[in-house]
Amino acid sequence: MRVADLHPELRRAYRWFPRPRVRRGWHRRMAQAALALIPPPKPAATLRFERIDFAAAPGTGVRVFTPAGDAASATGARAALLWIHGGGLVIGAAATDDGFCADLAERLGIVVVSVEYRLAPQHPFPVPLDDCVAAWQWLQDAAPARGIDPTWIAVGGQSAGGGLAAALAQRLLGEDGAQPVAQLLYSPMLDDRTATRRDVDAVRHFAWTNRDNLVGWSSYLQAAPGADTVPDFAVPARRTDLTGLPPAWIGVGDIDLFHDEDLAYAAALRDAGVECTVDVVPGAPHAFESVARGAEVALAFHARARAWLQEQLAASADV
Image: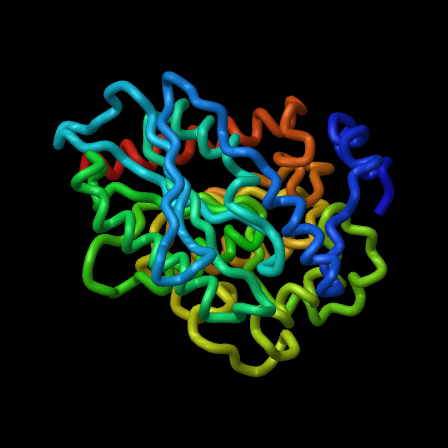
């Protein structure tokens, strides 16, 4: 894949973009050391930021963005989004999405809770998903005291975080308690079988290649991807019955490695009677909305995602 294949507004950002290195342990340790240096968000009069660590599982917790002002429903509570960061299941940190979470909280007047979860291969499945479940439960328990309606919460994420958000929605389905009202999935990592496709190994996918994908899924599953069976909730695209899941928005670029699996999952959701909106951006590679966040094509992509989420939250408030 060449720079010329990119959307014109994205070429400059990706021309020199250093692709994350994840294939060796020291690569991942260096990436995590750099992420640990990200400073906390600057104080803002319009937004309150909190970091809450979970003592029961060191290295986990949430980052909470609460807007000032009144954006409550008729019940006197406001909506929330549980957000999960990306990184191929092997790198990444919640702090990388602080700007996105703060912006979304302010624009929509909702509380955004960003999950810090443990990473493979040190913490393979089900640990990262368990950490997301723990964050969901924390938000459910903390909601009344924070003026949040526990039945008015969406889940979302980017890349591996989008896959974990989809897996979280599946795992919560049918359990006692509130269910997510929507899924906001940015280029989600949904199907380990993509990593078995040797025909795409030679394609120079920007930001995340299939060889990286093989490392991510192998580390998470602690087994070669593409096995006949996988544990329940480990791979969202492997679930055969998607009936009853909340409405989903799936946004992805047409030259993203995950494009085909994302559209296949969207089709499976629709076949199961689940409302699913798909937003495909021509010439957009993986994570373009983060790498080139100031580009008009990225800003417009975020705006469409916000509008969809706002519409879903408004619809759930009327139920």
